[in-house]
Image (tube, rainbow, N blue to C red; front, side, top):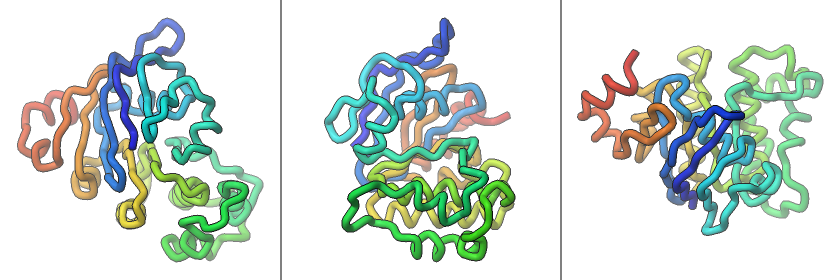
Length: 231
């Protein structure tokens, strides 16, 4: 579904990504792991067209590198940024409405789905998003992206700063995506969650992929964990 090959990215003269190669298959959860500054967020931003890059990014065998973010979204790629980017003066329900695509006849997700997965959003559906807690805003950002009915969703640090109970909800949510046939590229620092719900994982270091394998293989590779993941 997603195939990245030889991806380089730059911030001005700073060369951040160095030939990243990775893929995500249909209906698969793939974790992208690494320390802060390793290039994980830049990778998903480059895939989404938010950072200029060179190389190849193919989605369903179509080259998307160089396309505009809204064009990539229309093809079926969803992106949940780390900074949430909710519309603070709009209500929860209005934020979800903005996530919908025009002309959809049978979307995979409904408002009822969102409120069932996260009852707290239903309780606050008429509340301005800007006054909600960080955890509630994270739920809203995830759900707003889903309302666009993506086939692949890239999620950057969804559990950052969340209470343990909300973290468990997010993990259940990601499993629900997989059950409905949505592919997930998960950028995450919490190894416990990432290794529990993902089928494969990549580890990044200094803008390159330094490990690819299953969660079991990563658990068994003490060198990679110590060198590239553990603080």
